[in-house]
Image (cartoon, rainbow, N blue to C red; front, side, top):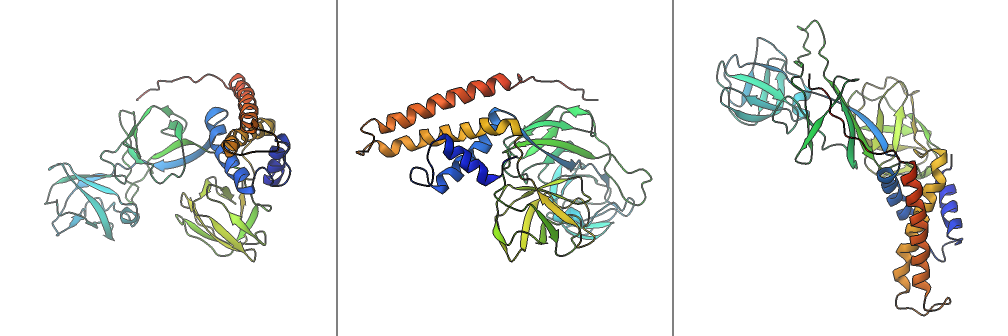
Length: 355
């Protein structure tokens, strides 16, 4: 498996351009970044699995309080309802509000005073209007969705509402009430496989250790024992010891003296209990047999992009320099596309059960 430096060398070798005389470091870096997106779209998609819960709690308002919803019967409200911007639907009056605060399992503060005694309500996910919807707007830099499973292991059809709401094409979902009064925990997990750009880390050391413990749901971590200096780029992926989830870096982070504060998505699936726990970045999501094809794709794009520089210039190679760059790039690109198409299986649309 090639690291980032080896890839830049391979690309510039294909262009027969050592150093930065013809292609600057930033030009090569940008071409690799765009190539990672294009390769995921044209060749083998890079799949990022994310588990999100359906939200379908329901109940009846037990007493009135201005800008609050009370339900002493079920006592099913959660402290995370406010931080997750859960939506409350008054089904009696068909009105909506957003959860703003948590007082107790029997009372939450809401954005509008819409309830009176005996009004029926449902709780939905952030920005959603029914129990079959999930908010996917926090998922960074994805291009499309590959598949959806609910419950996990059962593939489903889905629809995208607007830009950031996914609606399951199912007949029903379970009641998501998981309060202490419920004997069997509900099966609410939805597995969404997003297609996002391939990953090629610019780091030279891919492992770190937690400098402090972290709570479940946290979206930042304090890391130590990293490489001495460098930058953790947006879009890099990592795994945490004892976690099944994968995480995406959402803000470029500078490493200083082997430490860094890293911001990521989604929140930690469970608490990090000790500073001996490790996290490991993905060096590359490209398969070994794809590396050569990917490098050809990047080299071709670089050559085509360089051609306009010579439109109005007198060059060592004569007046046809820009055409030479463009022609070489287009020919190499055509070869790459034919290879990718021959190795890519046809896309098939499936219709799954709603039951």
